[in-house]
Length: 480
Image 1 (cartoon, rainbow, N blue to C red):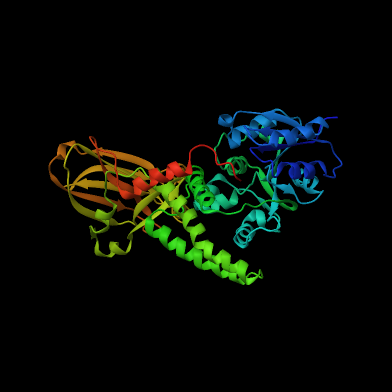
Image 2: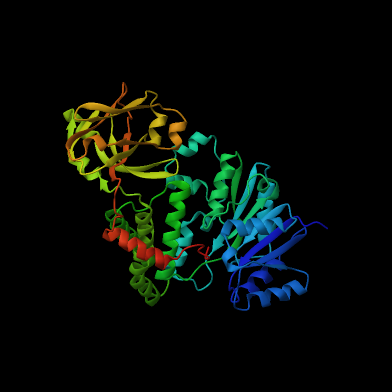
């Protein structure tokens, strides 16, 4: 009989967990048939040997791929193509279904509505998990007991959300999840090194589907936290958040430092409020600063490595520039936000604003910059905004930015060749104008001078980022 559901379990060196995981899977009570496939990607412990015991009893199929071929998205999509079930259930090898109804409730959540593309389970910290592990898991959507359905009324609504809100909207977790095969045929799991679940959820929501969180389907899953683990996790989280959602957690060192102290203060209060024995709480208090520092460093340094970085950043120069008219100083400020999936540091210049500064063009160079309007403004205004650049009072650039859908999804990028001003001091002016000054959040994105015969930057931040990249490693981070 054709199975209704296919359980897919990627595994690598999971001999400590795999027997418990598989036993719980095959102990499920369902009124339908299901199959299970384990995809091993080069284990050098007893993972395959243990899995073969279940295979001999015709409960499991074991597939093998080389370690170099593993990819979170590609491997799950490959496994789905080897199965027959109408529902593709992904489970990580170090998760354990919490009861015998895990599978039926997860599949049932997908069956409630034809618009539901997929559903995911609640995660419960393992017995003996540390206090910080429990606190962090309880804060996640997948750690809560309230069910939810995510959907979009329109694509414009998605692009008007700030990046963190987009991530929360698209929450979906392959620790324990189910997808409809009918949807997977239209929207395959993306070939992604990380966050394949969130990206797939985003594509489903954009296509008009819903995503369900089903807390009645639960698994035991948590990780012992270490500084190395959290550094690598922070690194890969930032890479994925920036690439797919435009989210940057710590754009600069000051925000990372501030974020550390705020997070530390909040987490220590939560640890001390727990009812664990005093020695256990004290141990968590002592290690928490190290764990948080590692995680935040991973996130911040991943961002530093990704920064394009002009060879001469004009942001600080323009921050001290002459601003006209005088009241425009209240409408000009340094900031940062994302348009589409692209996060940029910006100089907000709510029109009318004229920002001028003097600079020396030392060699053949280009002025590069982006223009955009903060997505939130599209809810409030209709009038376009004009962006102009003057050099020595001569207009060399003009672009009109309309309040239309296209400008909600990407920055508009430009460059101006400065060759004719080589060796000269120039007066550079950035101007924004509009007939409507309300909600005129016009932004000049990362203006800077790029020299044509440049040398690669070698500041402390970049050196640390390169070293951190070696520590974090490349390729797939295997812990979910």
